[in-house]
Every structure is written in C-alpha cells, then in structure tokens.
Amino acid sequence: MIPDTIIVGVISMAGGIAVGLLGAKASKTNADKTLHGTERQLTLTHAIKIAEFRQAWINDLRDSMAKFHSLGILEGALRNAEFYRLGTKIELLMDRKDPRYDRLNKLMYSFYDATSGAERLLCNAPFVEVSQDILKTEWEKLKADLAKAAAPAAKIVSHIS
Image (cartoon, rainbow, N blue to C red):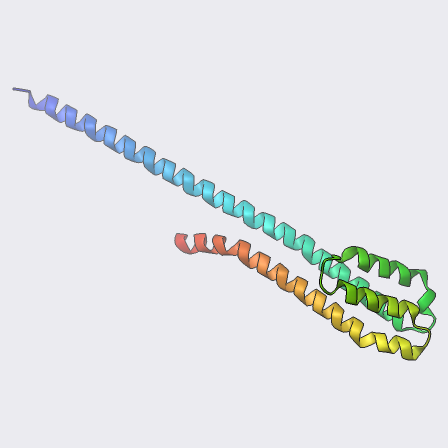
C-alpha cells in the first residue's frame, strides 16, 4: 500500500505541472494577443502617416490649382512665369493615369492659349469643376484608407471594453 503522503505529493506535483502548463499556455496566448495588437497598431500608424502625406499632397494640389486659376483669369497674367510654374507643378502632382488628367491638362492649356478676357472666362467654370472632382475623389480615397486601417483597431478596442 502506498502511503497517503506520497499520493498527496504525486497529486500536488501533477497539479503543479498542470498549473504550470496552463500558465505557459495563457502566457503564450497573452503574448500572441500583444503581438497581434502591436501589429495592428503599426498598421494603423503606417496608414495615418500615409494619410498625412496624402493630405499634404491634396492641400498642395488644391493651393496650386487655386493660384493657377487666379492667375489664369487675371488680365496680363497669361505670360507670367509663376502661371507657367504652377501649371507645371499641377501636372507633376497629378497622376497621368487619372481619368480626369487629360481634361484638366486641356483646360490648363486653354488658359495658356486664351488671349481675351472672354476666352479666359470660358475656361473658368470647367477648370474649377474638374479640380473639385479630382480633389473630392482624393479626399474620399484618404477617408476610405483611414477607415479601412482603423476598422481592425476599433474591433480590438471593442473586444477589450
């Protein structure tokens, strides 16, 4: 017959091993959750940084379009070096694959070629319209990218709460 103290010892030892294994599993699970959370945070941080760059690009494009438009409408501004510089800057900021690029480019050259106030005014509304369309689309892309990046982080926060 095995003494009770040995049985108690074996049971205690088995219990200790089980608790240790469960603790190790819990630690691994917590480590995995922490790693997953860190990965999500890095993804969100990356998306926010890209969004900041994209917002700065949108702001620069908007500012250049507004200045170009203002100079294009003014009398005597058509041969101004700043006017040409802004036109080139807009072309460089734009993606040539954008479906509105050709229309925008054509409108900018219409401003360049206009010789009278009436011709410049004909360029006015279409240039503003295509510029607004481009800027709105880029703003919507920025918001969608941020929402997409933030969704997994929001899911993690809702699970913690």
